[in-house]
Length: 213
Image (tube, rainbow, N blue to C red; front, side):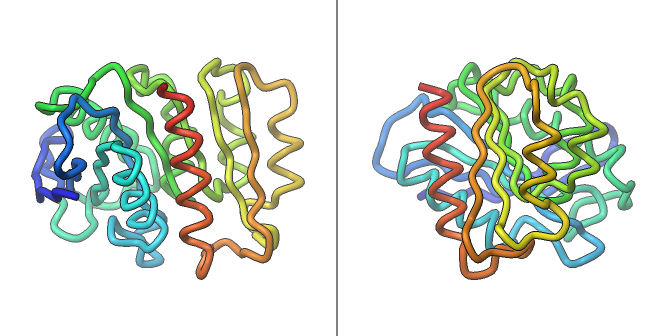
């Protein structure tokens, strides 16, 4: 895949990211924005789950943008506990929908752990995303969001032994959710999803491919 290091604005801040497009294929491509886990625990755009999703998306001719939230790596600003970071996700979506060679009407967003909770908290900001993916979302983030009222196709992925995104609790929280909802439990996995990155990536990209087709 062709990877391009980019810088883009989120309000007054400049964020860094990597935009990838399928090589040796002509667009316009659908695109997936991927949001990384908690920065205070070392999460960034090079997280193994994030990069696995991006590599797998390339195989299905889907462009991706992974980026560092404010205060992470070379992105300007400071960590804001998921509040101001909602604007970062919106800015990333705006970048890909205007990017040459990308179909701005075929966009999805995915977040892992902290990234998933940022998406859950800012759903109304992401109207250009046609589908949503939540990888190991904290249960509280789901319960305290408007997810159940959102009609877009949604995928939730959690490890069997995850103590933060507890599968049974997540499924209960999603009762009576509007729109198509899929739930994938990764057998044997915990919250880090270490060793199961490819399993997660396969589930995510298969869902996004179907949702955007």
